[in-house]
Image 1 (cartoon, rainbow, N blue to C red):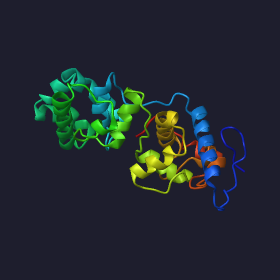
Image 2 (image 1 turned 90 degrees about the vertical axis):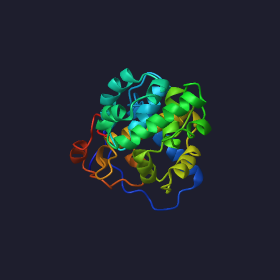
Image 3 (image 1 turned 60 degrees about the horizontal axis):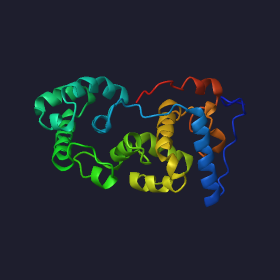
Image 4 (image 1 turned 45 degrees about the vertical axis):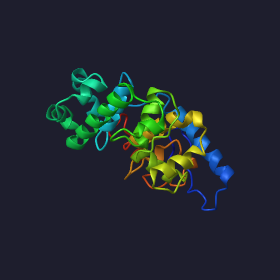
Length: 248
């Protein structure tokens, strides 16, 4: 029988018996604690020095990798260091700078729009509330939660592709709508942990709990996961699937 990284035997498939609300809360919080031990350095993998840079980088991160964004933003911020400068940018020059991130025309339109809104409506500063952030062109709840949690220490749950996939695998939610997922998970995990939980799940999704072949055989959450067995349970096979860095 395969073993986990901690040396414990791989679990048998979990019972299909209904799980009480209390049991779900306890299981979710225990899984969060295990993730904290597994990824003690979990953090936002976008490079930024202030809230404006994080906002721009998060908009650019749609449909591309954080690595690609981090390769693109140094030149971008050197040319347009703040909202006023970016709002006045030549659209074609802006598109050229962000082209490596993909969908560059739509992204340039969003960056010009949000920068103009920051300049005209917020004195060039990134607002610190959800209601204000989502008024900016190209900014939805996911982007707003990234900025609030990582630039302003306002707890928020970032429901990206990895997060949504994992919470459904974990049985924390059956929803596919990000707002509903955010609400349901928020009721399971203490508010103070929302931002760091987002990073932990994103890291786990990038490194181990992959979409097609999760590394079940070495997953530290195996005993608590109702989806155990979706990926290889053999330790040797599973270990080859683990990635040390952020592939996407």
